[in-house]
Image (cartoon, rainbow, N blue to C red; front, side):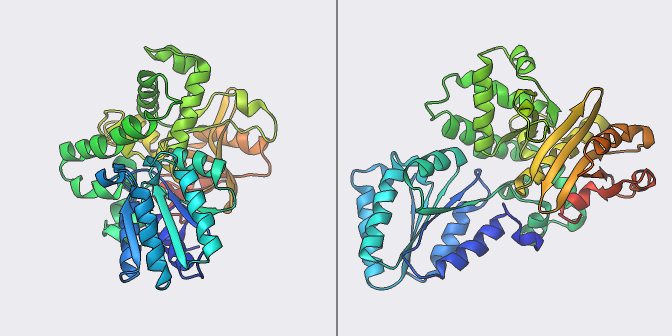
Amino acid sequence: MPNDLLPGSIQAARTTLERRLAEAAPARLQLLVGPRQVGKTTLLLDLAKAWLGRGLYVAADAPASQLPGWRERIWVQACDLARQGPAALFLDEIQTQPGWSTWLKACMDELHRARLPLHVVATGSSALHLGSGSRESMAGRFERLGVAQWSAADLVAQLGVPASEAAQRIVSHGGYPGAVAYWPEPERWRAYLRDAIVEPAIGRDLMALEAVRKPALLRQVVALACGHPAEIWSLDKISGSLTDRGALETIAHYLDLLREACLVAPLPKYAGSTLRRRRAPPKLVVLDNALLVGAGDLQPPDPASDPTRWGRWVENACLAHAVKRGLAVTYWREEPWEADAVIDGARGRWVVEVKTGAYGPSDLRGLAQAAAALPTHRPLVLCDPGREEPARQAGFTAVAWTEFLFDRW
C-alpha cells in the first residue's frame, strides 16, 4: 500500500470519502473521527467545494448552531438540495450537538424511506464522543474512518518538508500540520500546541464528559504520560506519583479516555491469549511527540547533549507510529529482560528493540530473550541510520528508525 494511503492518514480518508461519495445515494453515514488540528475541517471544505454548489458544509460548533431549530433547518435545506439532484451534507464537529446520534439516526432513516440522493459526512474531534454515540444509536447506519496526526511521509508530500529532516521532525516536533509554520519560532509553536491542541482536547472535549469527575487528576495523568514517554508505569506507581491520588480504577478509566481521544495509548504487556495482560502495568505511549511539549512543558531533547531523553522520544515516536497505522502493539517483559515492543499486523509479527546511539551485542540481550520466548515473531532493531551492522551481526533484522517512520521496512 502506498505511503499516502496508509490507514490513519488524512490522505487515505480523502481518497476513501471521494470514492464513497461517488457511489449511489442514499448510502450509509460517513463518520470521520480523529484528534484536533489534523485537517478534518479542511478536508470537508474541499469535498463540499468539489460538489459545485450541491455540497452543504455546516459547522456544528458555530454560534448559530445553538439557536432553536438549527438542526431542523439544516436538514430541510440539505433535503431540498437532494430533491433537485444528488447532493451532500458535511457536518463538522458533530459531537458538540447534544443527542447528535439520535438525531442523525432519525435523519438517516427518513432519508432512506424517501430515497433522496443525499450523502451525509460528519466529523468529530473526539473518537470517544463519536464512538459511544454511534455504537449506541446508529448500528448498521454508518461507516467509520479514523485519522491520526500526520506521518513523516505526509509532511513531505503535503507540506514540502524536506525528506531528509521529516523523520527527525516527527520526533522533535510531532505531526500536527498546523504547527509546521511555527517551527522556526519555538515560543509561538509551543503556544499553538497548548492553545489549539492540548487545552481544547483536554479542557473542552474530555472535561465535558460526565465520566471525568476529577479534572485535576486527569490533567496530572496527562502530564505524567507526557513527562515519561514510552515508559512502563503500574497503576500503583502512577497513583503514588500524583498529588491527587484517586482510585486506581479512576486512573485506569482516564487512561482509556486518553486512548479514545487519540492522546495517549496505554500499551498492554504481551501475554498471548491469557488474562495476564490485564493485570500487567501499561507502557504509556503518547500518540504524537508534539504533545510532549504542549502538555509536558518540555523542550525537545538534543541528541548530542541529552541522548537518553532523545532515545525515549525516538522510541515513543516509533511506537506511536505503529499504533496509528493500525498495528497491534504491546511490549514484552520477563524479569530481568525486556523488549520495547511486540508488533502484529499486516507487516508481519515482530519483536522490536529501539536503539539510538552506539550499541553492541550486550545491548540486545533483552531482544534475544524475547525472540527465544516468541519463536513466531522475528526480531527487529530500529537504530540510527548507518548503525545497522551490530544488529545484523547478531542475526537480527535492522532498520533505521527514520525509515520505519516512513514505513519503509
